[in-house]
Amino acid sequence: MKQKPKIFSIGGATFDIFIKAHDQAIVHLRTPDSRKEWFGLEYGGKVLIDEIHETFGGGASNTSIAFSRMGFDAYFVGMVGTEYGNRVLDNLKNEKVHLDFASRTNLDKTSFSTILNSFEGERTVLAYPGANHYLKVEHLPLSALATADWIFLNHLSGLDNRIPMALVQLLEKHPRIKLAWNPGHEQIKQGLKKWKPLLSHTEVLFLNKEEASLFSGIPVCPAGVKQDDPRLHGHIPTSFLPPYADDASHILCAFSQAGVKNVVITDGKNGAQATDGKRVYFCPVVSHKIVDTLGAGDAFASGFASARILGEGLKDALRYGTINAQSVISYFGAQKGLLRLKELLGKVAKSNLLVTSTALKKQK
Image: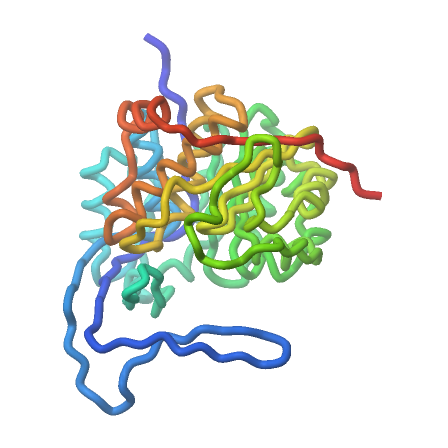
């Protein structure tokens, strides 16, 4: 019997409460240099709640459950605290995620988030990092990680860079292990040059458009059409990018030249772009029907990574990720919509997602 791929997800786990409030507003604020939107509730008022949902989230929790549903041997490497910790671990256990390397701390509560959902499906997250902040390099099961087929490094809380650097040493000793990396904000702020040692050992790098620009220090090339009109989200087969999608090829190239094998940049409803260092690929979204966007990034990344683990190319990997993310945003919470392998394969087979590509132009 063929052995299942062994995947370790390193990062956070949270207990989440989703709230959909009555009489909410979205406030638009423009300055000469920026345009921002704010979630608004009446100041000093009493706001009724239309819906409330208790769920679980966190990068390592989400991705380990996604990999378990794909039929892989999925391991969670993360930290829970005093409050909600048992519920978080029970949820992982019920999803058949291995908890051999889950750690506990009495120094703080389990990471907790309150998510305010808007009538448009977007959300504002009130996040308390809690126990996630206490995950240190000492908690890494290095001998077990040496047996991994893949390691998925999720967002890390705090300023401790020793975990990524420990993985550099591990990957140098065991080059057969493949690393998927979704960097945290602290690593992104430190820039590409700082993290070139880990990037050069990264099989797949996942970033959203804003993160990719900040990490690389390179702005995107803005698209010509930005109206939020589904009719403009058609994708002409003869055109690599549709008119609404920003061109991120120069950023993709920068990470490719830093040694990343496969780079993926997502841009919400504007689709995703990826490169293997030779060609750049674009995949649109499935639809604009949104219940809640939290967890879409983790769903996309775990779907994409699963395709690569199963030996699929970048075109199908983009389809796997896009369809998994679309399923997740159809529900409240980051985990309910995560697809099992059979479900995902069925949706991919029925999908008419058109993935286009063009040669990646090397930057001087």
